[in-house]
Image 1 (tube, rainbow, N blue to C red):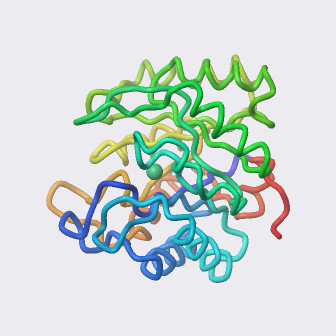
Image 2: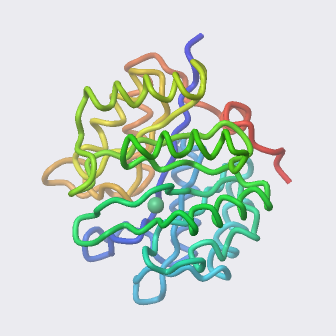
Amino acid sequence: MTTPCIICVAITGSLPTKADNPAVPTSVAEQIESTHEAFEAGATIMHAHVRNDDETPSSDPEKFARLKEGVEKHCPGMIVQLSTGGRSGAGQTRGGMLPLRPDMASLSVGSNNFPTRVYENPPDLVAWLASEMKTYDIKPEIEAFDLSHIFRAAAMYEAGEIAATPYVQFVMGVKNAMPVDREVFDFYIHTVKRLFGEDAPWCAAGIGPNQIVLNEWAISSGGHARTGLEDNVRLDRTTLAPSNAALVKRAVELCDKYERPVATWQQAREMLGLREVA
Ligand SMILES: [Zn+2]
């Protein structure tokens, strides 16, 4: 049997607002509802940022706590992955929610440019975030915006700074960072297998119209897929996505096309080596 595909839904992000797409969930209640629909559609990881009431990005641990509690209640078994990346420059407040012990957290291990700014991930902050994740038994998802980030993750794993085999996500199509390039994508896969073993799971995310491109590349190459309104608010050039679930359904259709079963939450937890559901 081919490896089941884990679908991650990135529900909100730190950038898109309701002005971009009214379906972007920005209050905690909206986020829980949107996650529930996405879970029913086949997503097994939810990746989340939280927002202030004016939709600006927040790191408020209290909001993260309410979101995590709501998702665990309404989507039992779903993997909760909180973002530590959303507020560049905010220093250690980016990890203020880690004591909540989510199943996973995103971890960027190097800096790069974003569309209008530097995405700052200085070595001391990366080391601190990784050590907090170890303390609270949280599996990091390594956000690879560049090839060097995969090597950094390997070095951290070797040094015991990351507990288990890193789960690497290739992020492509962020303006001023790594573009969507098939040869680089294939080399990323090759590198992950070389550094972490043939069976090491990996996933990929594309930004904007490239979301569906990266979904197709990942699903057809044995990887896992990330979708959701954080990365892309449209179904096509002229149609806004009506929900996170609609984007998840698109990934599910690609799994059908390539005869990949969609992973259940039990399979996803096993493949990622996560702890038991509390
Ligand atoms: Zn994010």
